[in-house]
Length: 448
Image (tube, rainbow, N blue to C red; front, side):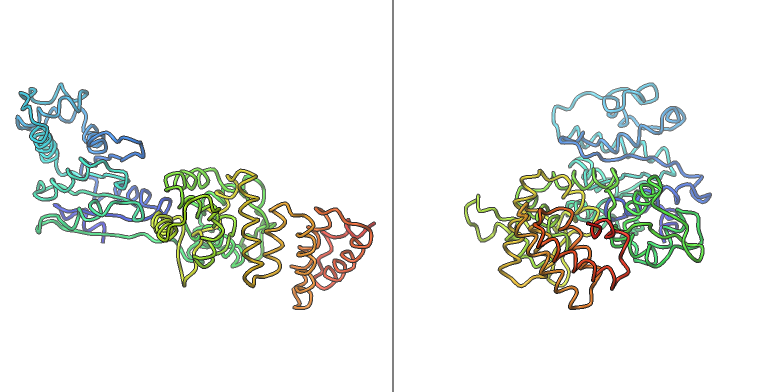
């Protein structure tokens, strides 16, 4: 599909997908194939800077022609590029007289760029991360596609959740004779995540448990899968498993890889203030919840009531791609992103959000273990101790000994207990440990 479009000049190819889904890797592999070898590939990238340079990615791409410009038959209008491409001035026509009109000057620059692209053909012009494009770059893409050189293929990539509508529509406005191809890359499912993991680890397969664990943490985002595997391998947390696969030694805690953390926090920082509050609340809640619950945890009462405030903030947060809505519930798309935001919260802010979450849980029927979790991290030790014990009793009654043991271990390690309460909890913990054969982590707690 994409291969055919790359060979069908004039053409425009757009590749859409979130950060880390594999847009750049896909193009890199396609552009080195033998069928593309006879075409000049010019690559430019848009950058997330506060004030983008006009035509920055296009100029970066055309600069890649370098000394090859010497053998090209350029028209006089290419002289308009001298100020933008000083390193190419030895091979550009003489500079043109100023016109004294900004719009006319810009039009002449556009014509000069098209003249160079036409003379350098066949050309594949790759402009990556068009969601960060300045206005002139978007205008130029629309301009060149309205009447492109016969041997030009334009390839653009962008994040669908961040791109402006007018940029997304650029390909649709191309001339009728232009071949158009659009590809939206999606994250992997559980099976695909397992296949990628096996390829990275150099094994035939990984266990279904491990594939499911990776998918839950990463939502099948290829970059996140790679980052997680690199981290756990570096820490020695992967060991050979059955059937030639691999298993996770301990599925409890995993720090967020730096690449995922930095990317996530950058995206949060770009959100409006209320949308940031929603993201922080979602990070504390961890699991997807109804929008009203998310609003309730995020709202600290410091702002004047506004009926449109939280719906607007929700649109911003979901529109950014950080949060997702499914079946009426809203939460982070993958747990690594939630963990990155959670770990970045100041201690007082984190405790305050947990406190509000605990209050909402108490007002609306919620799992006792969930209430205990929020009370614990809100710093309300006595309330946490009582809630955790009730949650453990409920878990034991329902046959969930492992969950009961986890809750009771945390209380015995983290809460001040008098002898009577410690004895009660120790008896419960012993029962849970026996029912689940969970003795390794409890022996030291019961030996008193």
